[in-house]
Length: 151
Length: 151
DNA sequence: AACGGAATGATAATCACTCTCATTCTGGTC
DNA sequence: GACCAGAATGAGAGTGATTATCATTCCGTT
Image (cartoon, rainbow over all chains, first blue to last red):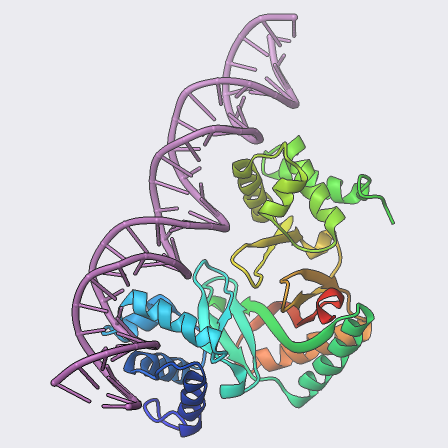
């Protein structure tokens, strides 16, 4: 596993490519956002990001996060509280699901077993096609209690 | 299946019971909310509800929806846009998942087969417990194109 | 070095949602 | 059938996350 500072080169390359395609620049602030999200391993809120990178003004954080979302580099995740949470798109990290703590609202990644993933993919396709949809993605959200809140 | 106006008696009875337990009343407005959600078959936004029941002021809609959520009668569903969507709790309807149209944002219910549901529940629990979580609910969200948007 | 478009960041504005509070309703009680 | 207490109502103010504004600064290109 790469260190927090050493996010795999391919992520930065992919982001650079996409930004270039839209005549935009991979600035320091955007790099900080991507590094932070990549290092977190779970979806982060804007306050969390700004707290961990004080040189990043809130307005710039929101604006650049929106830019990255528009490019498909970042995905917005709805949580339990009224803060949006952000994570790198799956194609830049890895396919995963989320588990939300019903008590404290924290969101963590869950990496599915091949068995789960197989069941999910097949059944999702079957059920959805009954309703005439073309399914492109799936997302499983688990709700429960995190280790800290179980006590 | 019951007609839109004739939601199964048991739903109203259950809601009445819960409200009574909290010394609250099953007023006309609350009945309208429950009827509307039960008749919809998909999660609705507050603007949608208010539009279909103009006698219902926005502030009352929000306040009563919150009351119903606190009682566990209604569940809030996070959608793609910045409007919350609301549906009856699963114990008052039936366990189901959602499929979201990536283009128009519409959310519809998906009713899984028992076989899928069993596989899903077990596998999800197993994976989550590896991280020390205690899982109480699961929710599958499919993303795709609805029949209208496929054209 | 100069130009043009993009990025920045402090601030104002927006928008979904919640709170406030004076008034009205309801359901029991005598 | 009037009375009382607590619940509900609804118009409007308030809150807080997110977005738009805009003058200034930065960066790449010529």
